Length: 207
Image (cartoon, rainbow, N blue to C red):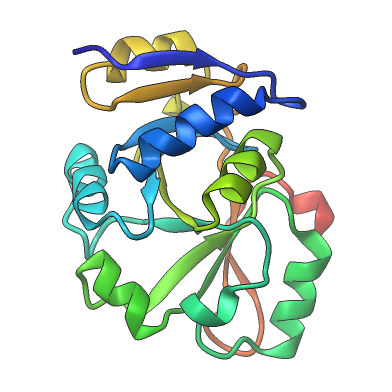
């Protein structure tokens, strides 16, 4: 069965539709939604089968896939990340929400959810009303991966209708929030005391 295609206004998403999307996620589904950068595959953090499915769709083993957590804010970081150095936390507070992925040392709980031995996790707080509305209703982070591999930034699909054509039989829902970017987030390695840029993307002017 083909995925449902739902259109939402990026700056003022329909709350009834948001609840419909959240119900789909709580039912264990994998969906595609827009972030403040590129479109992404997502499922809830407690959905182990969904995480495995995202990895399978990407053609990667769970230990090799670049998965991030989409978070509503920084309030629950201690549950997912080990102690964050003060300079890093100050930087996060300064630039988030925004198009940044912070690579942090993960807690054992995250490794168990991802069924891997990875010691790090990417943390994102997107500047997206759609994502924020979903996370506020869900009250749990989303596991996320852009729908192309990290070395194909120029090949990200930006048109949601084209995304639907490609992915309609592999996910249960595609959220149209308007044209996406073909530039991914800026990635910062924060596993030591200072943030080190490991991929330049959107938001470089904020650093």
